[in-house]
Length: 567
Ligand code: FS2
Ligand code: SF4
Image (tube, rainbow, N blue to C red; front, side, top):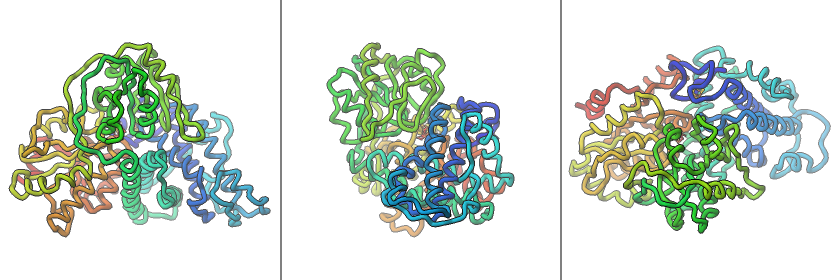
């Protein structure tokens, strides 16, 4: 195995024995082969001139496959073998549509692939396709043998490898966001078309560093579109997030803990638990669900339990009840007792945990989780009180006058975008210290699980505006970009970088990569990224990011505050 896609890559270079995340070598290799297969699908779509709008099921499966390989989403080899087989079948059927050969009977491909309409054969020679589009494997052993030659290190030039992986990791985050939107019935052909274009480009040895840098920025452009799609899907269905106090204590009923990011799954769980006497609590990135008006009607939506993903081993013990993962971040459970209480759905999975599939209409049957909850004790209280959030774009726009006045009067000197991820690394204490030591006339804008490093600190408010404004999940970093653009408009500035906003972002997995690329596309400069820079940036690629965009790392909290405040 070789994997360097997340911030915890071993020794800052890559995991090559076993993942720091717990990913086993065979799982890593199967993930490599799945990505390779999806690249092969993309090669066929691009070279065969297929239109994404005709590709129904293929589009959906490509998103899901990319999502499954995100850090901490899925550790289940059987799920990857099944998915590779599924993608190979779809790939081979697509290939049959585009290669030269006798015409198929009318309606054949439409039926075979669930296509929107029959697409005529393009008649390209099969020899023009990449190996990824044609390789053959049967058993898991054959998959592993093939995987050994198609992983990250198959690209020898370290700069080309770095750029290809930067694009692929961005696409994984992008696919995750598009998949959530899809679960809410929103999709877009251009979002799919870009996945094919970009993945096919990562197979093209004719593309050099300049073309790949341009494609990296284009990935950011599409990242904005994917986040906008998801934002529209969430807010049109559940309303705009609003200021909300979320209970962090517990009630007396037995309960289910829901984690991950998928609001459609949460809605189904709340509907099915309604009136059963079983409460539902959020964990980690599901916390912002409390900010949506639509979920406030559920009396059993009891609060948020615990902190960011990496604290789950101890927090799941004391929660006592079953846990439903809708996406990452899963930490491999240490005991069978806890593992038996964990359920997964969607792109997530863990061996030995029950996986709940949707039926043909997208409905999921959570009755086994509810039944289990009823047999288990209610959660043990680990903290009490409330935390406040809900500062997504519409809520902040509603407060715009107040915010603008505070900036004009000097009551607010600077905003700090501290969105992103949390993680286990000791160095992340920096973010708590940074938040604590920031001058009292500054405001933190946050989104993602990074917030748990400071969202329970008594940081106070400025004229009624809390000093930590939580917009929501990592994907709601989109709100932070909209807020910045709105402030630029209100203050009549020509450049987003003239705003009194500094960016000190914590990253961990690939959704943070697409957020970063989206910010770069929007022209944001001087973003600081920590706790360490990505292992997948080669020295030359890192140099381009530093010189073109002013990307930097972090130092100590004291030094960095001085630097950001211009002291
Ligand atoms: Fe946090 Fe993990 Fe949100 Fe990331 S819960 S690091 O998935 O995407 O953020
Ligand atoms: Fe290592 Fe991160 Fe890859 Fe896991 S996802 S194997 S921790 S680099």
